[in-house]
Image (cartoon, rainbow over all chains, first blue to last red; front, side, top):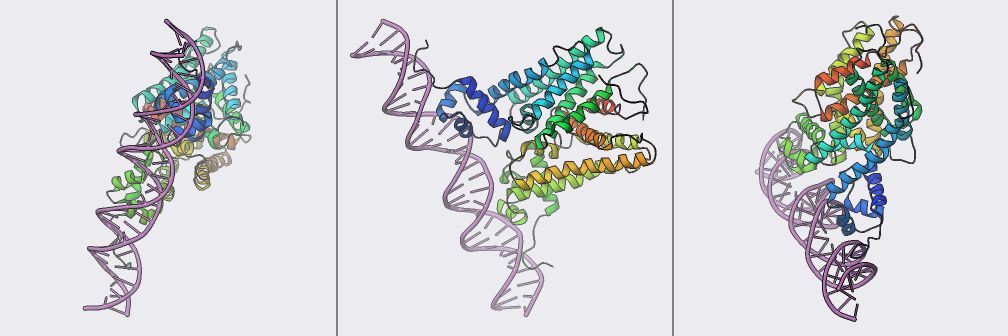
Length: 203
Length: 203
DNA sequence: CTATTTTTCTACTGAACGGTATAATTTATT
DNA sequence: AATAAATTATACCGTTCAGTAGAAAAATAG
């Protein structure tokens, strides 16, 4: 066992409460004391476990992405068809965004808008997250293209960016109106962009 | 002329600086002193002219919407075709979001995510703004439908919500990457959702 | 047992926050 | 000129903030 007095709280569960608090109120509006209270520990314990506010926030962001980001990406796993896979991904996002037991919206998107410019390390991390989702969708699209489910001339990067955009759009919408039917409407609309054999018309 | 000592600053120009500051740093991260410094006046003058921080913010939001929201909506005015009108609207949003002389992203979207739950009056105003854009797009779509430019069975509300969603998506993207070519790519993708005569396929 | 290491809690620090009292200044009214 | 009304700037209020000293407590190691 470790040498000194054992920690009396579970750091992972503590991070879950930190995620919850930052998610609800945002980075600036959340004080370190708020988080400490949510975990039911005192401020020095929090500092001892996670460093300063910025490092605590970064840890909470990682925890959020691992838990909630990983969950929606895994929704694609079972689907053989690329269209079905992307739809399953978006449906999973809708389900998460309309879950009444979770704070409204998406911590990643909220933080991307709120914290831009606060510090280089936060900026970098949030850009990385978005790029990660874009990359995951791109890989899945490429797989669909290889399997002949998409026209060979499809712009996969544009498609990936578009669907990340749809997720971002839903995150904005859900922050003030987490109605799943409206979000599903958005998903349905977005599924109309799939390239088909005839060339796209221009307006 | 007014009775007492005349104000030495222009309240409208002052609000422009307030918009700029809130837009850049967000509501919480901006102190009243920050805004006062940006206007080059002292704090009591600011309080005298605009009330407290919340009222100042509400005035700044109104100013932002009147100036930048009105601008993009007017981009639809000249276009006879509904597709062209919506595209012109989205193009105007792209132009604004990639203007290097303006703060990154969109103050309305930023505030929608950051300030949710801070106060009822702020919440209401931000919801109203989004509903306003949705309504404006809906009206334009309805006009297009009446003029036979859209299939009669088109879901106009879903379309309006979708395009508001695209604007929100671009606002998120632009906050960390205001590259106009990427934003235009998003616009191009979104223009593929227009309903056509044949019924939509399902995946 | 004693010594060491780590966590715990209370109490505190200096700085920044939103907001204001107050007095001086500048205008119009009488 | 005297008065009233409004804006100005300085200086301040109480509160909250992020972060920390320091001592007590609880564990292992010898």
